[in-house]
Length: 601
Image (tube, rainbow, N blue to C red; front, side, top):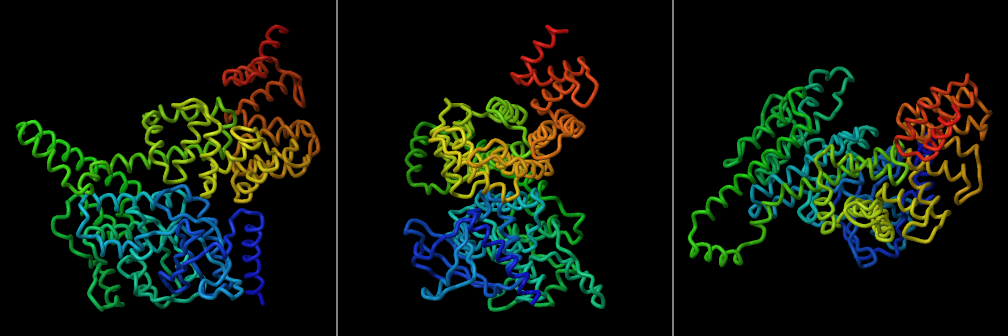
């Protein structure tokens, strides 16, 4: 009875998320050509054509019990934190139907995901290995490391990395699953085939279980366990086949014991020494001796950079010694070359550009959520400072974005450049269109800016109700920026009626997540007695905290409190001090107050 109650609780969460449009519900009638492409211990995966325009992957589950429902919710929450990364498989929404029976009424859920046309990495390597250069292999390894870095930066441990659940789409690594199957397995005390991924599992798990076979102590997989798996995968990328692979033989407990005792695959001949050193350090038996994923990414970047410099130097030397006749022959041979042979020279540039764009979007996301970006002037100053501090050429990024509009981060950032007028004239219409396109792929920041455009009429017709709707999507995912915006709508009656009680509740939630604008707003509501009893002391305390964090509104507010003695003794010097702090940030009200107070005293 309790399990049924718990299952209903998680199912209700999913249903509410659908009804409030936090997650899109895809209707069965728009899917066609549904084909089963994979099966696991907990469900099946299908490929389906959607509106005959693109393919989606549909992920099903055999049993919607308490454990499965809970872990689906957990997976959805993880997805919201990592949707921005190009090497993470995209989650688009939910469907409710039985892919194998058109007429059946299904109460189960399908996760609608990005479809990877080359399938699992294991299959991709098997089919394409003979055509892969070392530059291609470096590129695959680098993308995998960047995807894991994204997870670890968000505090997520995958725990189930292997070449069967790492996908490839258009030669691009796509990380999937995030340990969903592993969590269902551990939570439900069930076992799928425990031996199928033995070579990828941290051997500490085997050795600790053997040492403690008479107790309930279980080794907990962690970030260093992911690093071990990455090392094995790097070897697999270098070899083209799974570790310890023998035709028609399965992994067994003997192999697990041997690995825990130090057995590892031998390096493949002609593998660069620097690459071998990375993966052997990753699969070190002692977790403390393994590198972090940041170190792995950096060392791969150094290898790729060194390889490209060497290649370029060799080309330059060759061109300098060739005669005109030989140069003519080179030009004639160029047309005969497979373009794949010349693409790798740009790998580091492409990867760096993707990573730079990803880092810029992450930076914007963070400052928006803490409330450091609340005016166009402040936004422009923040992003330009970021470019200067990180030696980023904004013109080069803008030019790259113009020809790389194949993921939601790039769409959003190009919209952001047009929104602020960075390396181009301000173009609110173009910005709005780009934000809309990115938001339709679930991009959180893009959804926020679509809301802002609707609220202010930037690039579109002003629609305050629609603005609130977009803000609510983000708020209900638990982001401070969304909570702040919805709180402001209730505070000021934007798209809804004024509700001070609801406004302060939302502000307080955003404040608890570290948003300094929300902190200032809560202080203002205490100062004015809106939604709460008037409390000058509380207002002063909140203003003080927000002002010390650099919020110019709070600095101005603190100046007012000191000038007029609201709940404290008047102090003109302190008033001038805080007005000046705010005025230096360009806040007009503080500049006017400062001018008046200096004339008066």
